[in-house]
Amino acid sequence: MAKKAKEYLLYEGKPLLRDGNVLYYGDFSENFITRFTITETKKLKDLDVASKVTIELLEKHGDDIATARLTKKAERDSLYAALDIGVYWLEDILEMEKEFLNKAAQ
Picture (cartoon, rainbow, N blue to C red):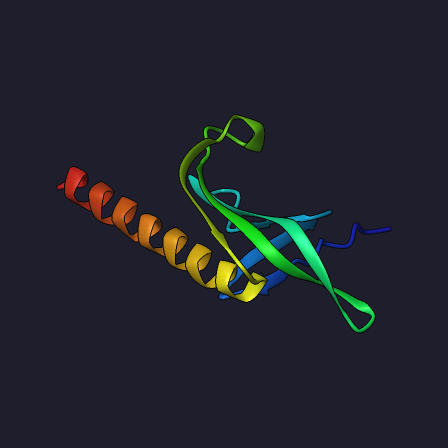
């Protein structure tokens, strides 16, 4: 029997993975990834909604996320606001890294 490929939720073209109250955004093969930690929730009818989210831009060294170095950190009052800034940070740093590598190759 053939193995079924894992399908990930994509947000803005990159994988968004969840592990409990922690979400990871970005391609794990790249050098940077964004981690969102839901630190507080509030009830909205029957749902728990994130009311405080910590955003961390991490520089990875290899495949182990535990050894990643913190580059930027912030806190927002909703998951939407956290995703907004986290996606911007990640795209910005990946673009700067690409430009740096292009200049170094010339």
